[in-house]
Length: 119
Image (cartoon, rainbow, N blue to C red; front, side, top):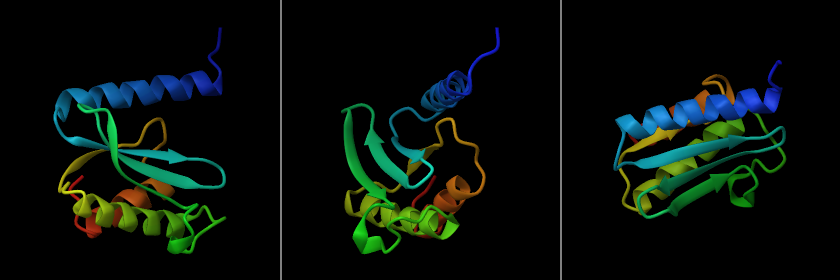
């Protein structure tokens, strides 16, 4: 029986996350969530189980409310890099979840790298 689109996404997300956990133990995780209307990202410490910093296209101070395009993703990436530095995090591993590393997800990662976060 064929798997649904959601089941395939969940399977891909867990495959990516488990592979990254083996390689990057002890580092913070930069987790991305992309919906049809917004993009958000969290910097998570898996050892303590806490969120160190977050950024989203829903925040009014970024000026991209209601937009979900490559430019909005780049602004969110820059914001999370600045907040990560303020939280004392220099390096993290990029957890794209089940999303393909293309378009908005790639723009977010590239902007975070340009702003000084090591991914």
